[in-house]
Amino acid sequence: MRIVLVGLPGAGKGTQAAYLAKNLFLPHISTGDLFRENIRQGTELGRQAQSYMRAGQLVPDEITIGMARLRMRQPDAVDGFLLDGFPRNVFQAESLDQLLKDNGDSLDVVLDLVLPQEEAVTRIAGRRVCRDDSSHLFHVTYNAPHEPGLCDVCGGELYQRQDDTEETVRKRLEVFDRDTSPITAYYRLRNLVVGISALGSVAEVTERSMVALRERG
Ligand code: AP5
Ligand code: ZN
Image (cartoon, rainbow, N blue to C red; front, side, top):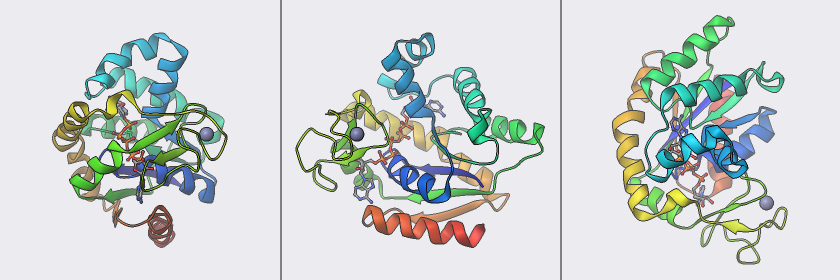
C-alpha cells in the first residue's frame, strides 16, 4: 500500500506512523526525520536544511524532492510506504505523482489526521523526542515517560525539538495553512482522502486509522 499521512504540525503523524508502519509492514518515511538525521550527522544536506527548519519554513523543493526520491527508491519501499511530512505543497504532490507514474505506480490513500489547532499547539509544546530513535515520541503530560527525560523504549535521552518554540510553531502553522492545506483539495479531486479525527488517545486514533485503511485497502 502507498499511503500519505497529512495533518497539522502536532496532529500526531509521527506517533501514528510508528504504529501503522508496524501493523502494515510498511517503511515509515518522514522527511522531517530524514532532515534531522542529516543535521545530526553534519551532512551537507543537513547544513542546507537547518536554517529553514529553525525558522519554521519549508526546505526548498529541489532539496526535499531529491532526498525523498532517493529514499523511496530503496528496496524496502518498492512495494509500498507510509509517507509522513511529504508532500507538503502542491508542487511536491505533483512531483510525487510523476515519480510514481514513471514506475507504473500510484497512491492508494491519503490519511488526513484532523485536529483543532489549539490542541496541536498543546501537543507540540509538550513533545519530547528520543535522541536514539525519532519514532520514540512522548508528551510531558499526555504520554509521559516513566522516568522524566528518559525514553521508556530504549533508555535514550529525551530532548525538545529546536523548531518547537512558540514563535516557530506559529510560523509552521502559517506555512501549513498557506502551502500544505491545498494538497488535501488536490487529492480530494481524485477521491484519495480519508479524514479521521485525531482527538482521543494514541490507541484510539490508531484503531480509527486502521479501520479507515482497511476500508480502502
Ligand atoms: P516535520 O518533522 O514533518 O514536522 P511537522 O509536520 O511540523 O509535524 P510534527 O512532527 O511537528 O508533528 P506530528 O504530526 O508528527 O506529531 P507527533 O506525532 O510528533 O517537519 C519539520 C520541518 O522539516 C518543517 O517545518 C520543514 O522545515 C522541514 N520539512 C519536513 N518535510 C518537508 C517537506 N516535505 N518539504 C519542505 N520542508 C520539509 O505528536 C506531537 C505530540 O503529541 C507528541 O508529543 C506526541 O506524544 C503527542 N501525541 C500524539 N498523538 C497524541 C494523542 N492521540 N493524544 C495525546 N498526545 C498525542
Ligand atoms: Zn528511544
